[in-house]
Image (cartoon, rainbow, N blue to C red; front, side, top):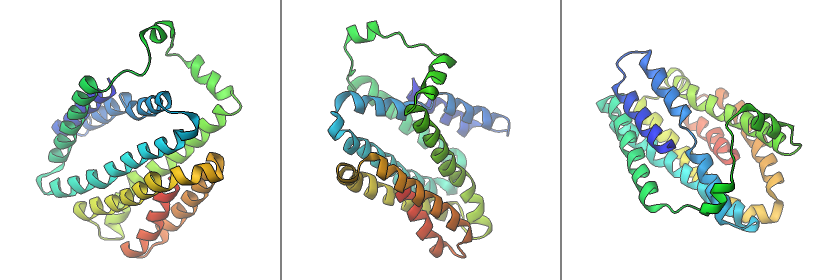
Length: 236
């Protein structure tokens, strides 16, 4: 369902010919933006607690690869307008949907799914917030995601106004961020988690993110900005 909604929202984004239709398309993307959470739950189902950090790190590395190839593809398509990049992304989401539908096996048995009584209401959310560990983890995840996405949404404007970045060069900057994310999440997280623990890694990541976000607006050139951008990718 998430992948189908993503494909539809990206298609609508490419077709949007007015300002009001574009937020509708992006709101549709948010409404069906649950594929990463489902992927994380899938990994939790098929791994043991001891190896879970490693494979969650590999999931993060795959997201980092998306940051590498997605912006690079977008920068190449920028000459054809925003619609071309949106249609290409819609095609990738549709291909992902077909793969998941025909090739991805269910991790839970029919009996387990029959016993499950998931309710979509606010009581589940408030119960999670009251939990001493889960509530703090949700709050921390919200704040770190808010910080990263705030940078992601505004860096294009900063890069254009102060650093002279056009759409093509901006795409390659984000690809650079993706390369760093792949190296850290694919190669380092799985090795560091058993040694230092997830709590220490998360704390260090938050501190590195904060320092990098504070330094990024002070960079006088794109070459100087690459250092805090790398720190931001490492922290994330």
